[in-house]
Image (cartoon, rainbow, N blue to C red; front, side, top):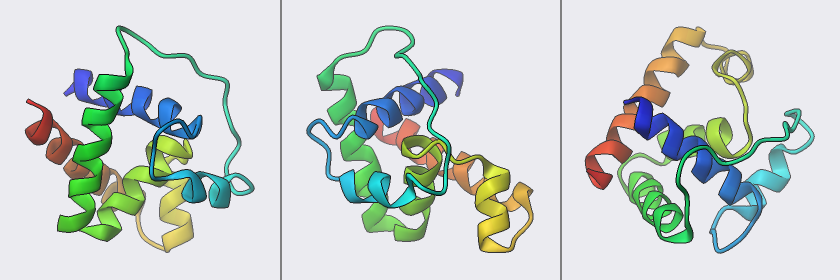
Length: 111
């Protein structure tokens, strides 16, 4: 699961750069709400891997659009689970479980 989290974090950095991704408007919309951190890719990373993760997240949107939005906000916009929970008015454990659900979906699609 750690490897999937790392892939999703790298994908978030990649998507934030707005290079070949379908999510630029989401990142732009959240830019005022979330502090951006300077991050670098960890591990091996290339555009093929990024596109594979991107496809998996896009397929997640067909299955559950709210979960896809949560994944975008968490990984692309670097919003914490607590921040997202406060915005939604739910307990942070629920948001964390949903992020984990999205992680598992991506892991199933990639591996």
